[in-house]
Length: 169
Image (cartoon, rainbow, N blue to C red; front, side, top):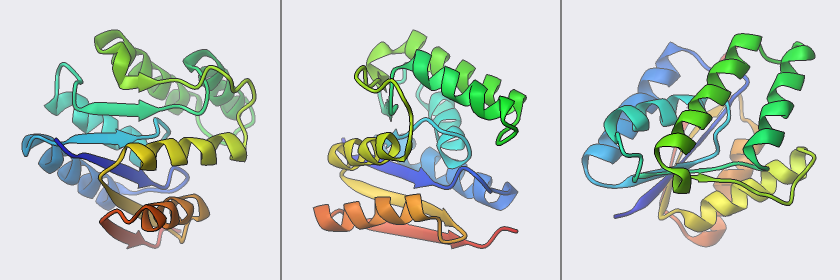
């Protein structure tokens, strides 16, 4: 089984991107491979949702968090308080991750050392994802720097890469 990293933008997506992510993940799971991703909003959320529908025991899923789930949850609720994301988005994301952990605790890889989530923690998580991956499919919106960093890391590792580029206003 190959592990395919799914990476993408969280700030801006649209229905076209969501449908492409879901179709891609469905194909990966149905051919017997697994996904590895980051457990954030947007592309990560769509990919995990689709993978959980296609792989009920969640054995073909690895989700890396930049911290443990408790710290990650607080971070997202704080971002909702700040108005960066919506409260419903935060609730749905945390519920999704808790469900994954309940179904298959090994599928949710938590970083127990990180107590403060910042860009360094996210970039360290990206390195973990790439180190577990046999390939990368990236959904890059508006030339996202985080997605570009992921692509660059995959190139350095010599992974096969497929990039879908989008412009969303």
